[in-house]
Length: 453
Image (cartoon, rainbow, N blue to C red; front, side, top):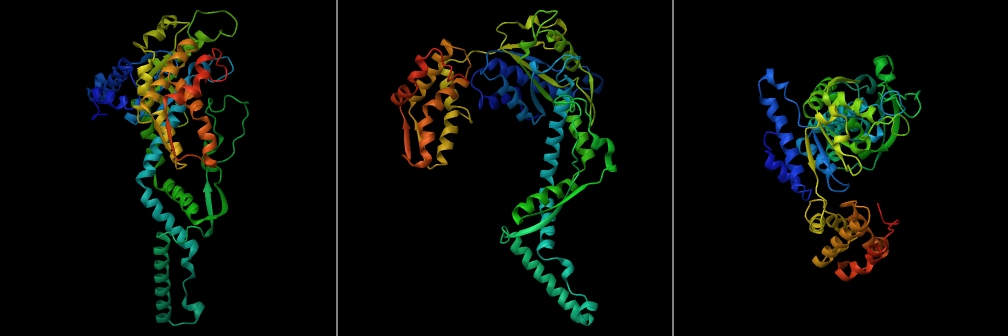
Protein backbone atom coordinates (compact mmCIF):
# COMPACT_ATOMS: atom_id res chain seq x y z
CA UNK A 1 0.00 0.00 0.00
CA UNK A 2 2.99 2.35 0.31
CA UNK A 3 2.97 2.91 -3.43
CA UNK A 4 -0.73 3.88 -3.52
CA UNK A 5 -1.60 7.37 -2.34
CA UNK A 6 -5.27 8.26 -1.73
CA UNK A 7 -5.39 10.02 -5.09
CA UNK A 8 -3.98 6.94 -6.83
CA UNK A 9 -6.49 4.70 -5.04
CA UNK A 10 -9.34 6.90 -6.29
CA UNK A 11 -7.86 6.80 -9.79
CA UNK A 12 -7.81 2.99 -9.70
CA UNK A 13 -11.40 2.85 -8.42
CA UNK A 14 -12.43 5.19 -11.25
CA UNK A 15 -11.51 2.45 -13.72
CA UNK A 16 -14.41 0.32 -12.47
CA UNK A 17 -16.86 2.62 -10.67
CA UNK A 18 -18.59 5.65 -12.14
CA UNK A 19 -19.17 8.69 -9.93
CA UNK A 20 -19.43 8.45 -6.12
CA UNK A 21 -16.40 10.66 -5.58
CA UNK A 22 -17.13 11.23 -1.88
CA UNK A 23 -17.28 7.49 -1.15
CA UNK A 24 -14.09 6.80 -3.10
CA UNK A 25 -12.29 9.57 -1.25
CA UNK A 26 -13.39 8.25 2.15
CA UNK A 27 -12.34 4.65 1.52
CA UNK A 28 -9.03 5.82 0.01
CA UNK A 29 -8.21 7.80 3.15
CA UNK A 30 -9.22 4.87 5.36
CA UNK A 31 -6.96 2.52 3.41
CA UNK A 32 -4.00 4.91 3.45
CA UNK A 33 -4.43 5.42 7.20
CA UNK A 34 -3.88 1.70 7.71
CA UNK A 35 -0.44 2.00 6.12
CA UNK A 36 0.27 5.15 8.13
CA UNK A 37 -0.63 3.37 11.37
CA UNK A 38 1.98 0.70 10.72
CA UNK A 39 4.67 3.40 10.46
CA UNK A 40 4.01 5.11 13.79
CA UNK A 41 5.88 4.16 17.01
CA UNK A 42 4.79 0.95 18.70
CA UNK A 43 3.40 2.61 21.83
CA UNK A 44 0.92 4.60 19.73
CA UNK A 45 0.16 2.10 16.99
CA UNK A 46 -2.33 0.04 18.98
CA UNK A 47 -4.25 3.17 19.96
CA UNK A 48 -5.08 4.21 16.39
CA UNK A 49 -8.47 2.84 15.41
CA UNK A 50 -9.63 2.25 11.82
CA UNK A 51 -11.95 4.72 10.08
CA UNK A 52 -15.05 2.55 9.80
CA UNK A 53 -17.52 3.83 7.23
CA UNK A 54 -21.27 3.66 6.54
CA UNK A 55 -22.20 4.01 2.87
CA UNK A 56 -25.77 5.24 2.50
CA UNK A 57 -27.49 4.80 -0.84
CA UNK A 58 -29.97 2.88 -2.95
CA UNK A 59 -29.20 -0.54 -4.36
CA UNK A 60 -27.10 -0.63 -7.51
CA UNK A 61 -25.12 2.59 -6.95
CA UNK A 62 -21.77 0.83 -6.31
CA UNK A 63 -21.48 0.32 -2.54
CA UNK A 64 -20.37 -3.30 -2.71
CA UNK A 65 -18.18 -2.73 -5.74
CA UNK A 66 -16.24 0.05 -4.03
CA UNK A 67 -15.44 -2.17 -1.04
CA UNK A 68 -14.57 -5.19 -3.20
CA UNK A 69 -12.28 -3.24 -5.53
CA UNK A 70 -10.59 -1.58 -2.55
CA UNK A 71 -9.75 -4.98 -1.08
CA UNK A 72 -8.40 -6.17 -4.43
CA UNK A 73 -6.16 -3.10 -4.69
CA UNK A 74 -4.71 -3.72 -1.23
CA UNK A 75 -4.59 -7.51 -1.69
CA UNK A 76 -6.46 -7.66 1.60
CA UNK A 77 -8.72 -10.44 2.92
CA UNK A 78 -12.30 -9.41 2.16
CA UNK A 79 -15.71 -10.78 3.02
CA UNK A 80 -19.20 -9.49 2.30
CA UNK A 81 -21.98 -10.37 4.73
CA UNK A 82 -25.60 -9.33 5.09
CA UNK A 83 -26.57 -8.08 8.52
CA UNK A 84 -30.05 -9.54 8.14
CA UNK A 85 -28.62 -13.07 8.00
CA UNK A 86 -27.44 -12.96 11.61
CA UNK A 87 -29.36 -13.34 14.83
CA UNK A 88 -28.61 -12.52 18.40
CA UNK A 89 -27.42 -15.24 20.75
CA UNK A 90 -30.31 -17.52 21.70
CA UNK A 91 -31.98 -17.54 18.29
CA UNK A 92 -31.52 -20.05 15.47
CA UNK A 93 -29.11 -18.69 12.89
CA UNK A 94 -25.52 -17.67 12.36
CA UNK A 95 -23.73 -15.82 15.12
CA UNK A 96 -21.68 -12.74 14.27
CA UNK A 97 -18.35 -14.31 15.22
CA UNK A 98 -18.67 -16.50 12.14
CA UNK A 99 -17.87 -13.34 10.13
CA UNK A 100 -14.33 -13.34 11.50
CA UNK A 101 -13.95 -17.09 11.10
CA UNK A 102 -14.99 -16.83 7.46
CA UNK A 103 -12.63 -13.90 6.92
CA UNK A 104 -9.79 -15.95 8.38
CA UNK A 105 -10.57 -18.80 5.99
CA UNK A 106 -10.35 -16.33 3.11
CA UNK A 107 -6.97 -15.08 4.36
CA UNK A 108 -5.57 -18.60 4.73
CA UNK A 109 -6.69 -19.45 1.19
CA UNK A 110 -5.10 -16.24 -0.15
CA UNK A 111 -1.75 -16.81 1.55
CA UNK A 112 -1.70 -20.49 0.65
CA UNK A 113 -2.34 -19.66 -3.00
CA UNK A 114 0.47 -17.09 -2.94
CA UNK A 115 2.87 -19.63 -1.43
CA UNK A 116 1.83 -22.25 -3.98
CA UNK A 117 2.51 -19.78 -6.78
CA UNK A 118 6.02 -19.28 -5.41
CA UNK A 119 6.80 -23.02 -5.56
CA UNK A 120 4.81 -23.68 -8.74
CA UNK A 121 7.83 -24.38 -10.93
CA UNK A 122 9.40 -26.71 -8.34
CA UNK A 123 6.08 -28.53 -7.82
CA UNK A 124 5.64 -28.93 -11.57
CA UNK A 125 9.14 -30.37 -11.85
CA UNK A 126 8.41 -32.88 -9.10
CA UNK A 127 5.10 -33.79 -10.74
CA UNK A 128 6.84 -34.44 -14.06
CA UNK A 129 9.36 -36.71 -12.33
CA UNK A 130 6.50 -38.71 -10.82
CA UNK A 131 4.83 -38.94 -14.22
CA UNK A 132 8.10 -40.12 -15.75
CA UNK A 133 8.30 -42.87 -13.14
CA UNK A 134 4.77 -43.92 -14.06
CA UNK A 135 5.48 -43.94 -17.79
CA UNK A 136 8.99 -45.43 -17.58
CA UNK A 137 9.77 -46.69 -14.06
CA UNK A 138 13.33 -46.26 -12.81
CA UNK A 139 13.26 -49.66 -11.07
CA UNK A 140 13.08 -51.36 -14.46
CA UNK A 141 16.78 -50.73 -15.01
CA UNK A 142 18.67 -54.04 -15.30
CA UNK A 143 20.59 -55.53 -12.38
CA UNK A 144 23.59 -57.82 -12.75
CA UNK A 145 22.08 -60.59 -10.59
CA UNK A 146 18.90 -60.67 -12.61
CA UNK A 147 20.46 -60.54 -16.08
CA UNK A 148 23.52 -62.71 -15.64
CA UNK A 149 25.68 -59.92 -17.07
CA UNK A 150 28.97 -58.79 -15.66
CA UNK A 151 29.30 -55.45 -13.94
CA UNK A 152 30.57 -53.57 -16.98
CA UNK A 153 27.70 -54.76 -19.18
CA UNK A 154 25.16 -53.98 -16.48
CA UNK A 155 26.55 -50.46 -16.08
CA UNK A 156 26.22 -49.92 -19.83
CA UNK A 157 22.61 -51.15 -19.77
CA UNK A 158 21.77 -48.88 -16.86
CA UNK A 159 23.34 -45.93 -18.68
CA UNK A 160 21.30 -46.78 -21.77
CA UNK A 161 18.20 -47.04 -19.65
CA UNK A 162 18.87 -43.61 -18.14
CA UNK A 163 19.44 -42.08 -21.58
CA UNK A 164 16.11 -43.49 -22.69
CA UNK A 165 14.45 -41.96 -19.65
CA UNK A 166 15.96 -38.58 -20.45
CA UNK A 167 14.69 -38.79 -24.03
CA UNK A 168 11.25 -39.66 -22.74
CA UNK A 169 11.42 -36.74 -20.31
CA UNK A 170 12.12 -34.36 -23.18
CA UNK A 171 9.13 -35.78 -25.04
CA UNK A 172 7.04 -35.49 -21.88
CA UNK A 173 8.02 -31.83 -21.50
CA UNK A 174 7.06 -31.24 -25.13
CA UNK A 175 3.58 -32.59 -24.42
CA UNK A 176 3.73 -35.74 -26.54
CA UNK A 177 2.08 -37.94 -23.87
CA UNK A 178 -0.72 -35.58 -22.77
CA UNK A 179 -3.56 -37.93 -23.76
CA UNK A 180 -1.95 -41.14 -22.51
CA UNK A 181 -3.75 -42.76 -19.58
CA UNK A 182 -1.81 -43.33 -16.35
CA UNK A 183 -2.82 -44.59 -12.92
CA UNK A 184 -1.96 -42.32 -10.02
CA UNK A 185 -2.33 -42.73 -6.27
CA UNK A 186 -3.16 -39.59 -4.30
CA UNK A 187 -3.45 -39.01 -0.58
CA UNK A 188 -5.89 -36.71 1.18
CA UNK A 189 -6.33 -35.45 4.72
CA UNK A 190 -10.05 -34.87 4.17
CA UNK A 191 -12.30 -37.10 6.22
CA UNK A 192 -16.09 -36.92 6.10
CA UNK A 193 -17.49 -35.06 9.08
CA UNK A 194 -20.95 -35.90 10.34
CA UNK A 195 -23.28 -32.92 10.72
CA UNK A 196 -24.82 -33.30 14.10
CA UNK A 197 -26.60 -29.99 14.53
CA UNK A 198 -28.86 -29.67 11.48
CA UNK A 199 -28.35 -26.97 8.86
CA UNK A 200 -26.74 -24.46 11.20
CA UNK A 201 -23.97 -24.34 13.71
CA UNK A 202 -21.21 -26.69 12.66
CA UNK A 203 -18.91 -24.05 11.20
CA UNK A 204 -20.01 -21.51 13.78
CA UNK A 205 -19.06 -23.82 16.64
CA UNK A 206 -15.70 -24.43 14.93
CA UNK A 207 -16.08 -28.14 15.50
CA UNK A 208 -13.79 -30.05 13.20
CA UNK A 209 -13.39 -33.63 14.31
CA UNK A 210 -10.56 -34.33 11.90
CA UNK A 211 -8.45 -31.46 13.26
CA UNK A 212 -9.35 -32.46 16.81
CA UNK A 213 -7.99 -35.94 16.26
CA UNK A 214 -5.07 -34.64 14.20
CA UNK A 215 -2.59 -37.23 13.08
CA UNK A 216 -4.53 -40.03 14.80
CA UNK A 217 -6.62 -40.39 11.64
CA UNK A 218 -4.81 -42.07 8.75
CA UNK A 219 -4.56 -40.28 5.42
CA UNK A 220 -6.91 -41.52 2.75
CA UNK A 221 -5.34 -42.90 -0.41
CA UNK A 222 -7.13 -43.55 -3.63
CA UNK A 223 -6.15 -44.73 -7.07
CA UNK A 224 -7.49 -43.16 -10.25
CA UNK A 225 -6.84 -43.50 -13.95
CA UNK A 226 -6.57 -40.26 -15.83
CA UNK A 227 -4.75 -38.55 -18.69
CA UNK A 228 -1.19 -37.32 -18.26
CA UNK A 229 -2.32 -33.69 -18.51
CA UNK A 230 -4.87 -34.10 -15.71
CA UNK A 231 -2.48 -36.22 -13.65
CA UNK A 232 0.13 -33.47 -13.89
CA UNK A 233 -2.33 -30.95 -12.45
CA UNK A 234 -3.29 -33.25 -9.57
CA UNK A 235 0.29 -34.24 -8.75
CA UNK A 236 1.56 -30.64 -8.99
CA UNK A 237 -1.07 -29.54 -6.46
CA UNK A 238 -0.06 -32.38 -4.15
CA UNK A 239 3.64 -31.55 -4.47
CA UNK A 240 2.97 -27.84 -3.85
CA UNK A 241 1.22 -28.80 -0.62
CA UNK A 242 4.35 -30.64 0.49
CA UNK A 243 6.62 -27.71 -0.33
CA UNK A 244 4.81 -25.02 1.64
CA UNK A 245 4.94 -24.57 5.42
CA UNK A 246 1.34 -24.42 6.67
CA UNK A 247 2.43 -23.01 10.04
CA UNK A 248 3.97 -20.07 8.24
CA UNK A 249 0.86 -19.74 6.07
CA UNK A 250 -1.36 -19.57 9.15
CA UNK A 251 0.86 -17.04 10.91
CA UNK A 252 0.89 -14.76 7.89
CA UNK A 253 -2.85 -15.19 7.33
CA UNK A 254 -3.69 -14.25 10.93
CA UNK A 255 -1.48 -11.18 10.67
CA UNK A 256 -3.08 -10.19 7.36
CA UNK A 257 -6.59 -10.53 8.81
CA UNK A 258 -5.78 -8.41 11.84
CA UNK A 259 -3.86 -5.69 10.03
CA UNK A 260 -5.48 -5.62 6.57
CA UNK A 261 -8.85 -7.42 6.77
CA UNK A 262 -11.94 -5.72 5.33
CA UNK A 263 -15.50 -6.70 6.30
CA UNK A 264 -18.38 -5.32 4.23
CA UNK A 265 -21.66 -5.45 6.17
CA UNK A 266 -24.55 -4.94 3.77
CA UNK A 267 -28.19 -4.28 4.65
CA UNK A 268 -27.29 -2.62 7.93
CA UNK A 269 -30.54 -0.65 7.69
CA UNK A 270 -32.47 -3.93 8.01
CA UNK A 271 -31.40 -4.31 11.64
CA UNK A 272 -31.94 -0.64 12.52
CA UNK A 273 -35.16 0.62 14.07
CA UNK A 274 -36.97 0.98 17.32
CA UNK A 275 -36.85 -1.87 19.79
CA UNK A 276 -39.91 -4.10 19.80
CA UNK A 277 -40.83 -6.65 22.43
CA UNK A 278 -42.16 -9.32 20.12
CA UNK A 279 -42.65 -10.24 16.51
CA UNK A 280 -40.21 -10.91 13.69
CA UNK A 281 -38.05 -7.90 14.58
CA UNK A 282 -37.38 -9.06 18.14
CA UNK A 283 -33.69 -9.70 17.49
CA UNK A 284 -32.79 -6.50 15.58
CA UNK A 285 -31.27 -4.65 18.49
CA UNK A 286 -29.76 -7.88 19.75
CA UNK A 287 -27.89 -8.34 16.46
CA UNK A 288 -26.57 -4.80 16.74
CA UNK A 289 -25.33 -5.50 20.26
CA UNK A 290 -23.67 -8.71 19.08
CA UNK A 291 -21.98 -6.94 16.16
CA UNK A 292 -20.75 -4.15 18.44
CA UNK A 293 -17.92 -6.10 20.17
CA UNK A 294 -16.60 -7.33 16.82
CA UNK A 295 -16.46 -3.79 15.42
CA UNK A 296 -15.29 -2.32 18.71
CA UNK A 297 -12.42 -4.76 19.02
CA UNK A 298 -12.51 -8.21 20.55
CA UNK A 299 -10.87 -11.62 20.30
CA UNK A 300 -12.50 -14.38 18.28
CA UNK A 301 -11.36 -17.97 18.45
CA UNK A 302 -10.94 -19.64 15.07
CA UNK A 303 -9.57 -23.05 14.22
CA UNK A 304 -6.30 -21.33 13.26
CA UNK A 305 -5.95 -19.43 16.52
CA UNK A 306 -7.14 -16.24 18.18
CA UNK A 307 -7.99 -13.30 15.92
CA UNK A 308 -8.10 -9.74 17.30
CA UNK A 309 -10.57 -7.53 15.46
CA UNK A 310 -9.37 -4.13 16.76
CA UNK A 311 -7.85 -3.02 13.45
CA UNK A 312 -10.07 -4.76 10.92
CA UNK A 313 -11.74 -2.19 8.64
CA UNK A 314 -15.54 -2.41 8.67
CA UNK A 315 -17.50 -0.85 5.83
CA UNK A 316 -21.26 -0.95 6.38
CA UNK A 317 -23.92 -0.13 3.82
CA UNK A 318 -27.65 0.26 3.51
CA UNK A 319 -30.35 2.10 1.63
CA UNK A 320 -31.84 3.60 4.85
CA UNK A 321 -35.09 4.46 3.08
CA UNK A 322 -37.28 3.48 6.04
CA UNK A 323 -34.83 3.71 8.91
CA UNK A 324 -31.95 6.13 9.48
CA UNK A 325 -28.38 5.65 10.71
CA UNK A 326 -29.48 7.43 13.89
CA UNK A 327 -31.87 4.52 14.54
CA UNK A 328 -28.88 2.29 15.26
CA UNK A 329 -27.91 1.92 18.89
CA UNK A 330 -25.61 4.81 19.94
CA UNK A 331 -22.69 2.52 20.72
CA UNK A 332 -22.71 1.10 17.19
CA UNK A 333 -23.12 4.53 15.62
CA UNK A 334 -19.99 5.63 17.43
CA UNK A 335 -17.99 2.82 15.84
CA UNK A 336 -18.85 4.06 12.35
CA UNK A 337 -17.70 7.68 12.58
CA UNK A 338 -17.66 8.29 8.81
CA UNK A 339 -20.92 8.40 6.87
CA UNK A 340 -21.08 8.94 3.14
CA UNK A 341 -24.25 9.44 1.15
CA UNK A 342 -24.07 7.84 -2.29
CA UNK A 343 -25.52 9.72 -5.24
CA UNK A 344 -28.37 8.25 -7.28
CA UNK A 345 -27.22 7.43 -10.79
CA UNK A 346 -28.25 9.76 -13.62
CA UNK A 347 -28.65 9.14 -17.35
CA UNK A 348 -25.16 10.54 -17.89
CA UNK A 349 -23.80 8.10 -15.32
CA UNK A 350 -25.52 5.20 -17.09
CA UNK A 351 -23.82 6.14 -20.37
CA UNK A 352 -20.44 6.06 -18.60
CA UNK A 353 -21.26 2.75 -16.87
CA UNK A 354 -22.06 1.18 -20.24
CA UNK A 355 -18.80 2.26 -21.85
CA UNK A 356 -16.17 3.54 -19.42
CA UNK A 357 -15.25 0.83 -16.84
CA UNK A 358 -12.91 -2.00 -17.76
CA UNK A 359 -15.74 -4.43 -17.08
CA UNK A 360 -18.45 -2.36 -18.80
CA UNK A 361 -21.58 -4.26 -19.80
CA UNK A 362 -21.20 -3.46 -23.49
CA UNK A 363 -17.64 -4.78 -23.40
CA UNK A 364 -18.90 -7.96 -21.73
CA UNK A 365 -21.59 -8.65 -24.33
CA UNK A 366 -19.19 -7.80 -27.16
CA UNK A 367 -16.71 -10.34 -25.81
CA UNK A 368 -19.45 -12.97 -25.35
CA UNK A 369 -20.56 -12.70 -28.99
CA UNK A 370 -16.97 -12.70 -30.22
CA UNK A 371 -16.83 -16.32 -29.09
CA UNK A 372 -19.43 -17.00 -31.82
CA UNK A 373 -17.42 -15.05 -34.40
CA UNK A 374 -19.82 -12.09 -34.25
CA UNK A 375 -18.70 -8.47 -34.25
CA UNK A 376 -21.14 -6.47 -32.11
CA UNK A 377 -21.08 -2.66 -32.22
CA UNK A 378 -23.24 0.01 -30.58
CA UNK A 379 -23.94 3.42 -32.04
CA UNK A 380 -23.54 6.32 -29.64
CA UNK A 381 -27.22 7.20 -30.01
CA UNK A 382 -28.15 3.62 -29.11
CA UNK A 383 -26.10 3.77 -25.90
CA UNK A 384 -27.77 7.07 -24.98
CA UNK A 385 -31.19 5.56 -25.60
CA UNK A 386 -30.40 2.54 -23.40
CA UNK A 387 -29.33 4.90 -20.61
CA UNK A 388 -32.46 7.02 -21.05
CA UNK A 389 -34.80 4.02 -20.81
CA UNK A 390 -32.97 2.66 -17.75
CA UNK A 391 -33.19 6.03 -16.03
CA UNK A 392 -36.88 6.41 -16.91
CA UNK A 393 -37.80 2.95 -15.63
CA UNK A 394 -35.88 3.52 -12.38
CA UNK A 395 -37.76 6.76 -11.78
CA UNK A 396 -41.20 5.32 -12.51
CA UNK A 397 -40.65 2.08 -10.57
CA UNK A 398 -38.32 0.69 -7.96
CA UNK A 399 -34.88 2.27 -8.31
CA UNK A 400 -32.41 -0.60 -8.66
CA UNK A 401 -29.59 1.57 -9.95
CA UNK A 402 -27.14 0.24 -12.51
CA UNK A 403 -28.64 -3.25 -12.26
CA UNK A 404 -31.44 -1.93 -14.49
CA UNK A 405 -28.94 -1.86 -17.34
CA UNK A 406 -28.70 -5.66 -17.15
CA UNK A 407 -32.46 -5.81 -17.68
CA UNK A 408 -32.39 -3.50 -20.69
CA UNK A 409 -29.38 -5.11 -22.40
CA UNK A 410 -30.59 -8.66 -21.83
CA UNK A 411 -33.95 -7.79 -23.39
CA UNK A 412 -32.32 -5.90 -26.24
CA UNK A 413 -29.96 -8.75 -27.17
CA UNK A 414 -32.23 -11.66 -26.23
CA UNK A 415 -33.04 -12.73 -29.81
CA UNK A 416 -29.44 -12.31 -30.97
CA UNK A 417 -28.05 -14.37 -28.08
CA UNK A 418 -30.68 -17.07 -28.65
CA UNK A 419 -30.44 -17.41 -32.43
CA UNK A 420 -26.75 -16.77 -33.08
CA UNK A 421 -25.32 -20.27 -32.36
CA UNK A 422 -27.44 -21.68 -35.20
CA UNK A 423 -26.33 -19.10 -37.74
CA UNK A 424 -26.82 -15.40 -38.32
CA UNK A 425 -25.12 -12.17 -39.25
CA UNK A 426 -21.45 -11.91 -38.37
CA UNK A 427 -21.64 -8.13 -37.98
CA UNK A 428 -24.40 -6.62 -35.83
CA UNK A 429 -24.79 -2.89 -35.35
CA UNK A 430 -27.15 -1.78 -32.59
CA UNK A 431 -28.95 1.43 -33.52
CA UNK A 432 -31.25 3.77 -31.62
CA UNK A 433 -34.21 2.48 -33.66
CA UNK A 434 -33.43 -1.11 -32.70
CA UNK A 435 -33.26 -0.15 -29.02
CA UNK A 436 -36.62 1.61 -29.19
CA UNK A 437 -38.21 -1.36 -30.92
CA UNK A 438 -36.88 -3.98 -28.51
CA UNK A 439 -37.36 -2.22 -25.19
CA UNK A 440 -40.47 -0.14 -25.90
CA UNK A 441 -42.61 -2.55 -23.89
CA UNK A 442 -40.36 -2.17 -20.84
CA UNK A 443 -40.57 1.61 -20.77
CA UNK A 444 -44.37 1.56 -21.10
CA UNK A 445 -45.29 -1.34 -18.83
CA UNK A 446 -45.66 0.14 -15.36
CA UNK A 447 -45.92 -3.27 -13.72
CA UNK A 448 -42.56 -4.54 -14.99
CA UNK A 449 -43.05 -7.71 -12.97
CA UNK A 450 -41.32 -9.69 -15.69
CA UNK A 451 -38.29 -7.47 -15.89
CA UNK A 452 -37.41 -6.27 -12.41
CA UNK A 453 -34.27 -8.07 -11.25
